Length: 113
Image 1: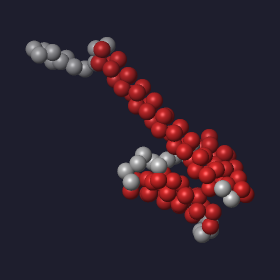
Image 2: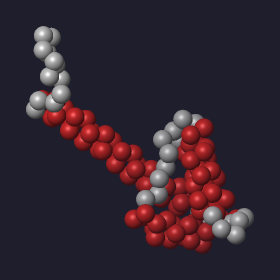
Image 3: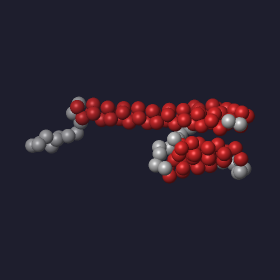
Image 4: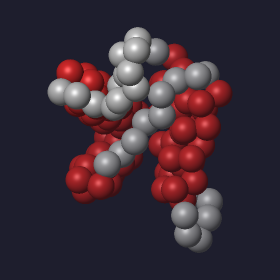
């Protein structure tokens, strides 16, 4: 998807030129998320457990001068994040349905619970 490619490339390019003394990664991820929000896409999240792989991917992308390495990594993280969000939503819906079936606070036509 061109919009995701744009957001991932902007992220990589900004973090690579390293224009600020501090906060380059945060600013790059903010720019990436701004682009995604602009195009009404779900936001990409790099989770804490993926931080070491994120840094390694940045280094490998620079070393091999191949931006596809970083984009592929980000697409995998994007997929992981969306699947996690969907799973959490499904669990919440399932839990809510169980509560309704097991006597949650409801009412009948004639009596309030």
